[in-house]
Length: 430
Image (cartoon, rainbow, N blue to C red; front, side, top):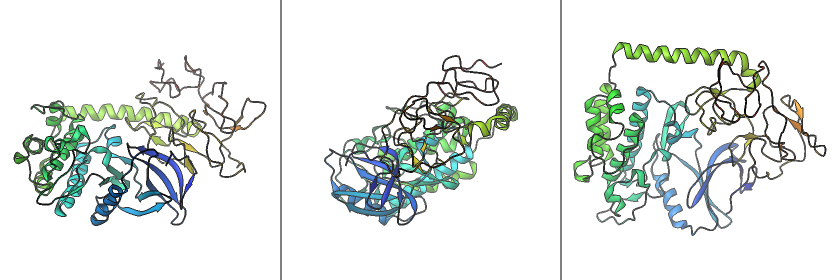
């Protein structure tokens, strides 16, 4: 099946946006028109030799594993010639969350949930074979769930398998086509190492690994020893299963935090308070004008869906992965779009499948398209007209500020921002 567009129907599902793309399938955010709920919809890609037996295997494995930390399959069916899988829809992947700061307490909680999901799979003789941050999905309340059992293998006396998996997290024996329970232990060790150090170790995994200083600054030596055992190249020297690793982790859990000198803690608090004060002042002045209701995916500063860069840390697409207030999302840039728009006003994306010829009023419309053949309504900070896709040429001002970016000429909050939120140009504050 070719890539689906926003608002396109497939069976009982209406596509809202594209969530991720893999070599054999694409995952979309979709709306179940019967159950009236949002789901993650996995659809095979066009032109690929998709083995439906593998998709059936993924569903059958996931159905066997009912656990709070394992992603549930809500429905699976053939729609035309395609086998489509509907799953619970989370907020973001652990890979996305790793792009922002994570407290030690939160990291310990997430590590425990990750190990709990794998331990449960191992109890049922299932080897996941593709343990990586992208396959852990976060839900409200920081609930972590393990997903994608497409490569999972059933442990038998003789287990034959390919070297399937993600190369950055794959165990040496799995790369040679001989996955074991210890292979999941190895991959889980790398994920947790990155969770605490911010760095993914690389081959040949000789200690001290890259990021070792950051790791030892956050956790006690006993915790480091646990990870070192999990990442041994020889599978016989690792934990036999994630059940065993989880048991050791839980014994260490109460001692996992490394106490820091009081001066260092005070310095971090003081710095964070200064940043927080700047953010609060900015929100008081500009929240209503910019609709900065979201937090940047890296620095957690206040940002708006219309921004193309975080004005605080400069990361591109700072709201990527957040849930929009609009009813649909652009499959290209993932920003929210209204159901009556014909084009995405935030990126030069393709047009949408027409759902209704009716145009709805919105108090956020404050300007008109400059195209004399269109004259459609525009909201502040749109880059393109949602009705004719004409580029918006006149720079948008920022109500309450006289400052403009020296590059794009759009309005900026010079006294607060480090970067232009519209073109990422560094801002000279003052």
